[in-house]
Image (tube, rainbow, N blue to C red; front, side, top):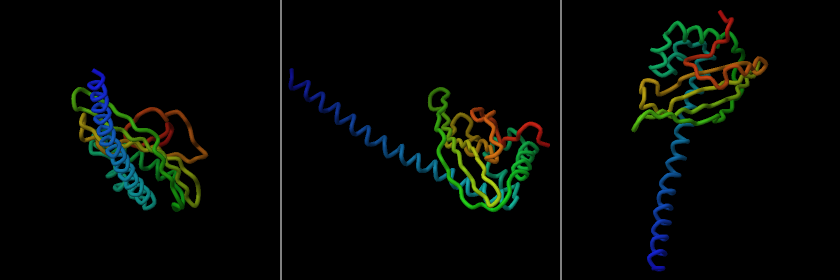
Length: 175
C-alpha cells in the first residue's frame, strides 16, 4: 500500500514538473514576442510622428480599428498628436503596463497587452499609453494596435487611464 502511494506521488511530481517546464519557456517566449512587436510599433510610431507622416500612423492600427472608426476620426487623432508633439526624440522607455485576456466560448480569446512609455524630446516629455491586441480569435481583424493615448507630462489627466477606446485619444474641446 505504501509503495503504491509513493509511486503515485513520484509520478504526479514528474508530471507536474514536466508541465511546469513546458509552460514557463512558452510564457517567456510569448512575453518576448509581445515586447518585440510593441517595440517595433513604438519605433515606427516615433518615426512617423517626427516626420509628420499621417499615413504611417494610420497603418500602425489594426485593420479592424481602421474600418470601425474610419479615416476621419483617425485623422482627427493624428492632428491632435501633431499639435502637441514638439522637438526631436532624445530617448524613450517602454514599460509593460498590463496583460489581460478576454474569452468567448471554446477557443475564442483575445490577449491584450498594455504598455506605457515615457518619451523625452528636445522640447518636452510625454507619457504614451498603447493597447495592442497580440492575439484575437474573437474578431481577428482587431489583432494589432488598438489605441494610443499621448499627453505631455505637464498636462497629464487621469480621466481615461482605465477606459478602453479605439484609435487615438483626443481630449474634449480639441478641434
